[in-house]
Each structure stands twice: as C-alpha cells, then as structure tokens.
Image 1 (cartoon, rainbow, N blue to C red):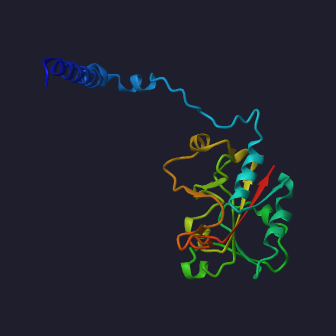
Image 2: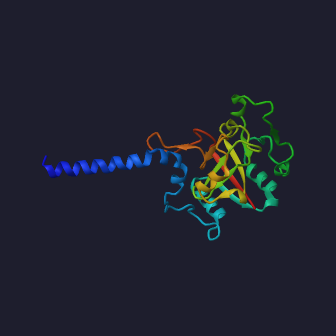
Image 3: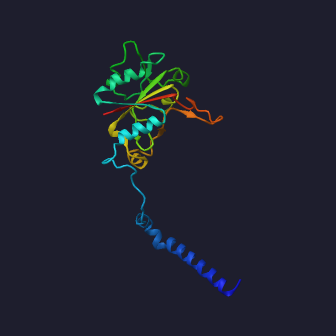
Length: 224
C-alpha cells in the first residue's frame, strides 16, 4: 500500500473512532436521552389526519378488505344489530364475557342461550360454543385491525379463539388513525391481541383456508 493510501486509511479510521468516542464518552452518556430526543426526524407521525380523513369509514373499508363483515349502526341501535348478526347461527347460543353491556343483548330472541365464563369454561366446552360477542380496546383504520386487551367486555384470549363466530362492537371513538395512534392508547403491560379479519392461512399450496387459528367468521359493528 502506498504512503498516501495508508494515510487515507488512518484518517478514515481516526474519524470513525472519533465519532464513537464522542458518542460514548461520559458527557454523552449522561445526556443520552436528551441527545436522542434532539435527533431530527422527518418521518410522518400520522398517516391519516382525522381532520381531513374519515377514519371510521377507512377502518370499515380496510376491515372489509380482510373479509370481515362490517356494518355501521347508530349508537342506540346496537341491540337489534347484534340480534341480526347472530340470527343465522345454527344454534341460538352466545358466549358473553363479563363487562359486555346488557343493553347490547336486549334484542336477542327469547330462548337464546347466553353463556358466561364464570367459572371459566374448559376448552372442550368453548369449542362447542357457536359465537362470542365482545367489545374491543381500540381499532386501527390504516390496517383494518381490531385490538383486544382482554379487559372488561373482552374476556380472556381463548374466548375469542375457539368459537367459530366472533362479533365485535367497536365504538366510533375507539378507531385510531394508524398503528402509532393506536399504541398511544394501549397499555403495553396488557395482553394484546391484534385481529385483522377472520382467521385464515394459505400455507398449503396457497389455498386459503379460514378458521384455522381462530374464528372462521368475524363480524364488526361500528357504533356511532
């Protein structure tokens, strides 16, 4: 290597090491949070502005793209919409987690069997339940995703995996514009389940099969 080549290599090496020393020195270590916060970031904080985009309509469109059945209803018309969504079940029985508002079920036909998970139902029994009705923690317009944190009105995770039919009620004010917006509304300490359409896989010969890892049918009522 020529003397000029060695000189270029040394100067580049010293420049890199100098940057490392500057970034990891005692002063930098003490101000890491401030330095990180000061980094210029030109990326978008939101993909959709609620002031100019109907994010509820966008959520309905994207959820429908995932083959969910989506219906918008007035906030005071949830009960008849729930009854209508469940009318085609082969057996008039529905699982209702604790915390689901009673007025959501006021329109169910007489004789409908309302099942509770108290005490906790075994998996074999849940597998025979035709449908479950839940609320949600948040919905994401950009991806058409419903997120459960398994708090009040949502039940434990297995309740929404074994029944073949999952009916979710989403309030309009629960629809977030995109994932960053949704994450700001969620508690990361909670068990989070992200649902984008009915459960499906195309692992075998690219043939779509629904109901493999969860419900074969996902119905969403957007209230408000």
